[in-house]
Length: 546
Ligand code: F6P
Image (spheres, protein in one colour):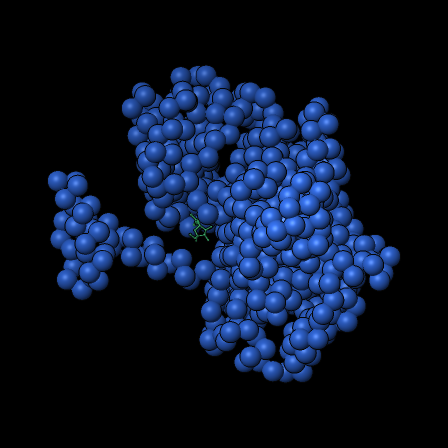
């Protein structure tokens, strides 16, 4: 059910009415207003957003901005940036912006600043020790490989950033990632490594996550089996956690623990010590540049009026389509091989934050909240799922992302990549009419009858919306700004939807049941109260094991 069906305050009614009246074709909007592209574009730090290929005009924006006012978005932004308890079900702030706070920021110096700085100093010292080959493994050789063991927010952010910034990696130290409970992943990663020169980062905010603890135990056994004495394990394990006691009792030397705080949400944590693998991969200065880029977006978010505020505009567009155009998914398509993991990262950021069924006060919602986020590196998707974008029956809004300059020497391929990107947003907008399709067939030598029967298959409706985000070049700074842009977009959506973006209770049930099922599989007795399907599947697992 859409929001307007159950909530009918004036703002909703006005938007519903506006949507019902909306007849305008995108092509016509450009035809009627030669300034449209410029009027519906924004620059924020290193990012340029063209949202002119959207189904909106000034009236649409005004109606959506009225809603922002009604939801007191301004004060919600201030509350977020000033460390108020925006995560009301866990009574804590979501203060990731404090981790990238800069002296020239519009945000007042947070009281936590000293703690953040102390942790960053510890991270920096560690990074420099490894880069200067001053950290030796158990047989005296310097560390050449670092394996980050973590999952969810303790994996997706650092993994995505390390992949995105591979052109900036320092030589001599390789960073690897292990997340999955499936032993195949750690098995594969360890196969290529030398235990004597490998260091593990156990990244877990809670230090209770099954996957991370199991993989860390496997890693520890691997090092011990290779001949590392127990008292040298400290040369091979560091941890990042809020749970110092658990990390210590797992066997991590307290000096090797990098703290984080409960006010950093898992999916917002790459700016904290969870970003250690990033700093190891690209160096401390690169990590600072990443933080700077995010801080630039924070300042923009804090100070730009809503109508010129990039995260707000992106959120309003998604809100408009999801509530009033029945859009149930959003494609994010980076025309950039290096950003291949960006959609995966965004899935957690957006779907774990906005996949909620009750409002901030626990009342069931009668409207849709989060949409499905999906995508892949381009131009690969053009030869796969773009067919559905162009001719499928549902409208899927798209965010295209591209950099103007490549980080490689094959400039003609980069030009072709950008041409592919523009071709897709243009094809979505223009489509192909029956008349053009018919004429093309006739020109190609088909008879009138043949053309008439084939042409409907070749019609592309067009009038499908997209945003395009451009950056000069994929640098740590531009990437920092891009990530912060989507973080803030998600927050704005949560304010409009009146939900808590910072908890994830739905994930907990699977964790609880997983532990119980594993216990039953271990002892071989399946509880009577289980449903028939789960029992049947568990019996198959048990008999395969036997
Ligand atoms: O599985 C959900 C989740 O709670 C995420 O929100 C979090 O990022 C991830 O697990 C990992 O948690 P931790 O860092 O505590 O191991």
